[in-house]
Length: 402
Image (cartoon, rainbow, N blue to C red; front, side, top):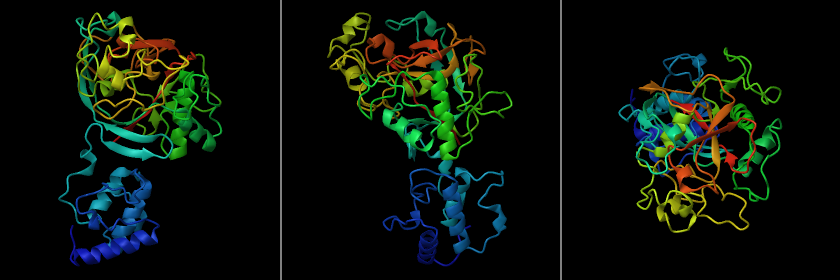
């Protein structure tokens, strides 16, 4: 669909229309000829409906449109204005049909978006991995098996860090239904300290309020038909009746499988990092001696970290990330997952496993700031009642994305 008129004329038209629409143009990247930004027209770090609308205006300014204006940027006619529309219209406007489909250019760990409240979101592609630990893994728990092949069919964007107190504060400013920060202030004294003492129910409410704030369909509901969203009036449900629409674009807790998958980041070893000193002799209390597991020390907040006073985690993102650029997946605070807890895994290959259908306990993943190395392994799992509050329990969120 590249039209005559020349690239300079096109660039001028793009600049004029973007200026009229309140968008900025980076002159050093003329025509975005290498598909730079992949549809992020307004350069805010996230591809949204605003980009689709902006790109639509650009197209109208450059070409004689071949569709009705009533399409309102719904380029693919699916009834929704989404990132897919923004990207397709943007590339069409630039005559860049030869570029690789931007919906597939993200690789594991790439920056997918930068959210105004929760910060960087990293892309994690769908895939298949072996969940659980082998019987030969030092200090494994028998509840980490049997291992099974788990296929995840949904791409997700994952928060780069755990929810910090600053993030909680940022959402509460604009969504007053969010309860006050539940953290033990002595354990998390700084704005970038992780939120802790948060219940599973509060994490679910936080996710829905963040979805509401950012204009995404919520994931959590009180009914199977997804008509009654979780909100301030019904979130603290001791009967534990919740439903998740995993196809919605809103924020949610990861499933247990997703959490292990992005923690492993393609690895099959006890950790997503190469800790040569980890064995049966160093997996327990011996790991609390700083320097026993030096590589793990660099990537994980666990008992080898000795805070003063010894009462809490480190600030989020203080340690090195895993291979997919996610921080604190092995330690700092434990993180709630969606799944109800079962002491055994399913037998055989499974697709998009989300846990058992009944039970009061919810899964937690990741180590904790005062735990030993064995609790920081990729396969380690634990569980608690959803109303539990400890200063070593927090959470991070994900979104299902194209």
